[in-house]
Length: 260
Image (cartoon, rainbow, N blue to C red):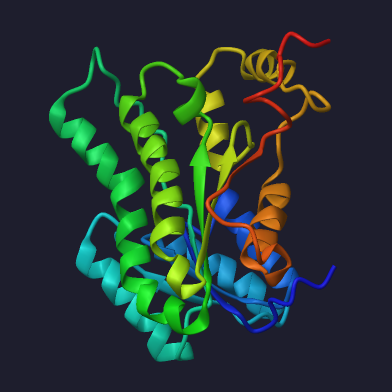
């Protein structure tokens, strides 16, 4: 399917690895122009070299997303380079394990800045251009807002906030024909997931214990599957879809996981 994203300029935060990289790759398959916003120059340069060898037009802007001025500067750099913004994917974040029992206010507030506040900042600074293009916003969220996880109050609260902002912005931006949706992830194998699973003595046993509870095909969601759905939500093929929380999780969040 041609999603009609050719030459559309799409900002993807945290787009140099994991789910973000999967989103960028899906956008490239649709001939869009993804712009990676990241603080990790080394990883993004490596990714861009690969894409450039393949003949793709990919741009990047460096930003520590917890810093409002750097968020603004990143957006300004995109506008200076391309003269427009057609879409924004808020993706960057980390399940940082800031819990209730062992946490503290400083850690909790820091988690909100790492995982939620920059969603607002990037949307705020990109908004003037999105109004011009009647663009779209996709917020990447996590099942933790629905299911809980234990020991990760900051991340869970942030994802609840991402869901709420998705619906709030969908209402606020109706007059500008800007659509806002969220894609909710459950179990997707990324470098961060690999790092977490490796903390267990027998990571293969732990991984098997998790995947057996994923209803659809007893496997994890791929970054490509997430990326392809994000591309659809950004495209005109989903032109009457806004304010939705779309779960790309193999049924993990809402289906009965006791199904054999």
